[in-house]
Length: 141
Image (cartoon, rainbow, N blue to C red; front, top):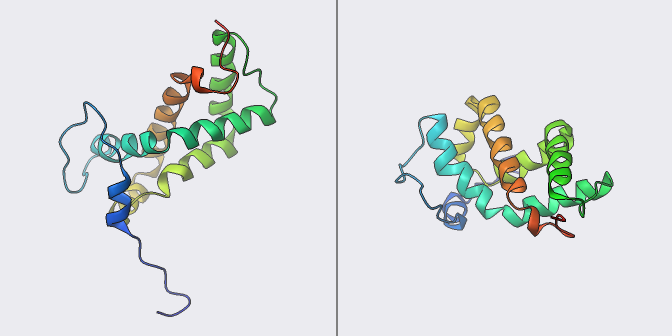
C-alpha cells in the first residue's frame, strides 16, 4: 500500500459496535432514505456515543461558564442556546457520529449532508436535554 493510499475502513467492526435501539424498524442492508438512515444509523450511533456526547457538551458548557447546577428550566434554556449557536460544538458533535460511518453510510451522508446534519444535531440536542440529571452537578429542581 502506498503512503498516500487511504487505509481501509473496518466496516464490520464499526457495525458490531452499534447497540440495539428499542422501537427501531427492522434493519435493511443499506438505508435508501434519510428517514431510514436516521433510524438505522444515527440513532444507534448517538446511543453508542451517549457518554462522549454528554462529556463534550459538559466541557464546552464549563468553558462558557454555564451554570450546570442551575434550576432545570434555566439549564435547559442555556444548553439549548449553546447547542443551537455554538458552531464548533455542533461540528464536534457531528464528527463524533460521522467518524463511525461505514464506507456506504459515508457515501450516503455526503449526498444528504445538510438534512442529515440537521437531524443528527436535533437528536443530539434531545438526548442531552433528556439527560440533564447525568451532567455533573445536575439541575436543581
